Length: 120
Image (spheres, rainbow, N blue to C red):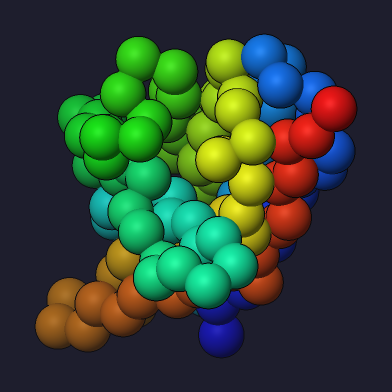
């Protein structure tokens, strides 16, 4: 079993910052690509950013220039530093992790989601 624990969401004023964390634990060989997604009320879930095991990061248009994804492979943890937050960033943020369970088995897992609300 693999567990993902997210933290760091909350209420922040426009222009503020938050840092999200998602830690993977359980029985697996390695953690591959780690991603952050978000879903605002009434909207489809969208990719915010992802990062490979080697540290290559890619961002969705909404995150470019404001958000930074990073990871600590020793802790199996991915982070999302969010700066210059705006009301349109309000959403539930989910982490997704590709986990290598065996030499022939890779599965993806989702976190429970953490609410980010940007409001004055």
